[in-house]
Length: 344
Image (cartoon, rainbow, N blue to C red):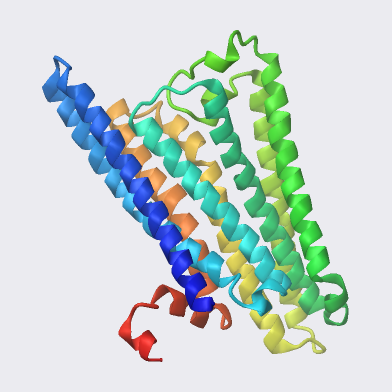
């Protein structure tokens, strides 16, 4: 059954990757047919070549990262201990949000690269799905940090506080809070006098900046983002300081406290990676005032790959390869076809 589930999981993610690449090839074919009817064929061919190369450079790593993330998610559901331990349940929630955000980000990037004009409802759905998952990640890291803090500072009460039921409740609250944020954003759109909203097209590429153009929406977004990430940062740093102080206590379990401190340090690194994603657009807006458009496009592509795409793949590497329980299972699933693993 485990082998069958493994093959099904691999088949699913390989199929998803092939579908994604097929969609990309279809888009390229459509662009090619449009370019043949254009009088400026030379310029259009150069633009098409640039789009193809850019799409390949970003899509291939994205497919690889999706496969790794998918194997990590499958690993966290492959054994009962992973499904019944709070920190693994929280890690699954974190990786799931990161994976969805990776897919949405790549879809938006390809649409922007092809200069596809989108309607407000479709663009709003994609951008709010990205905002939804962006909020889930830091809040999940907060709960994961608090769990480690309780394990070290209140070891006798840890089993009673950090239960599977309480963990599920915490995850539900995180999702409800994230959904409430999306709902408020949508309600703020009512301040804008949209006529024929269903057919109204977004000017420029589909992004949060081009969707929420009202002053109230902009102020709310800045305030909410600042509140969430500042609160999350304070909570994670406070947990780290508390565990570090407990590690120096004579009554503390030195090995357990040291391990928890290293885990919280990884949470801080992961939080920093999440934080980098929210400075993507503000940083581009700042650079747009000092560089030319051609230079800005190249900078945007580099930033997208290293600020938005690569950090989403670091999560399974940061947590999966370090954890003694996850690492052998994850490596087995990732390398299942290798002879060395088959002989075992």
